[in-house]
Length: 321
Image (cartoon, rainbow, N blue to C red):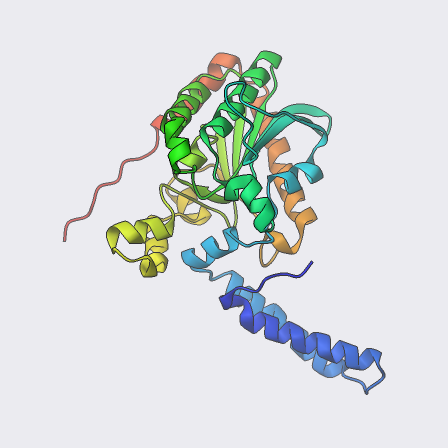
């Protein structure tokens, strides 16, 4: 799979191209380049460490949106067995931007629900670029209620820039659909664990994110608005998106420091798109840990814990000059 190169990754790509060229020359018998190869590989390792340990919030956003980043179905296929997808909200239609169904993780039955993007134009049109319509949230809630009846834990995977803001979505009451999800998720009597695996934008993300535990993958973001939307409002110009990303405190490390999430899940060097299997292994490990930690809690304790999880979010005042 060809990996798209982001602007800040170009120095790494140049080193990798030089290494590949020398390896081809060695394979063709054009001299011994082992010494130069060792030197370039050391430089590449050092450059990766420097770049990926000092990413700006805007660069994290770019990684969260990487076109080859693993999506919900990529993780489900690697983490789960016996996945049985369900369709439709029983009111209007099926929304392919949200997928969900019964599955097993190491033999443990769960309800998996996630937002889903596409890899190309055709898939993205089908998935609505990962922006759910009202019927998507109603489908998700239907599956959550089924899981509650069956006594199964719920795992949600979030990757959306936000709910779809189109006329049709407004006509079918997108705001009401999200609000009902928020209300009903607070009362679910089974464990709910949410993971932001890419973009976590606005109420569109929160509509699947009212959980007992909330985690972010290392290069994901979770925010009340996208950086572009914030820049358009505050600076009247989307060109200020980088400044907006820094101001929003939307990265995993910042959110953990502020006490807004429960943990950060590591990714392979360079991002999850470089190694799907390794990224899925990290995610699975945390899911299993949280399922075990929450398994001893009663239904009432789960509801109470989830309530306080959000009520205890801190208030911050604006400093005066």
